[in-house]
Image 1 (spheres, rainbow, N blue to C red):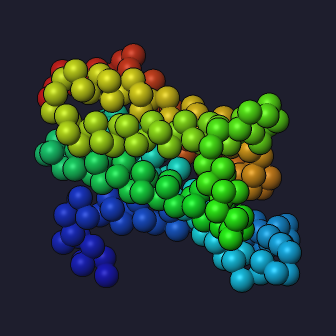
Image 2 (cartoon, rainbow, N blue to C red):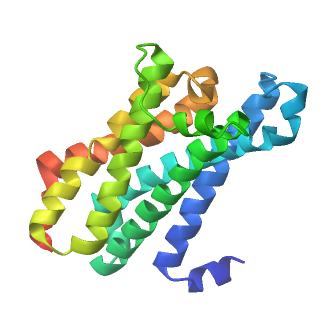
Image 3 (cartoon, rainbow, N blue to C red):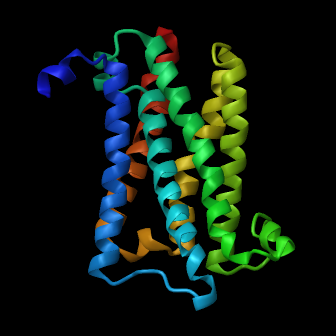
Length: 226
């Protein structure tokens, strides 16, 4: 198996690492649910759709890790630059992670809102900004803002990646995402806030993404090398 892995190019290996990091996140979450008996319970009439609650959580975790990977690739640390001799491969992986983060992030609220069906108007209102000032309401609104930023940056990046002005705009918008994700987690007070091991793991990834952004913004200026 090790010999087989050695033959895989670095681009494919990185995709495997990304997948493994997502699987580890989901496993930590599942173990924490088991340890703390945190299984979700709903009205017996809705038991057949409880699976969507779990799918919503899984897509949320996957989205968060993909966003963090996007920062690791976009703001290349020395180890990333050492591994990837060809900058184009890094760009392609960056687009790959950003695209899938955007796709999965759409599924997160779609799955979480399923329990509002068959009331279509109630289902649609789940995706709107909330006017209440509760912690959950603020966290909910931050989630929508993050979704809109990812939508904008994904489309904009795909069309204008090699434009220098586009890169500045991209980093300005996309750079605030890990901060917003961290705030979203804190305000929503969901599983990440509830379970210690999951909190350390997920927040660790987010802090690493923020660290990469700060280094790239104030120290590296890696655009000069492209």
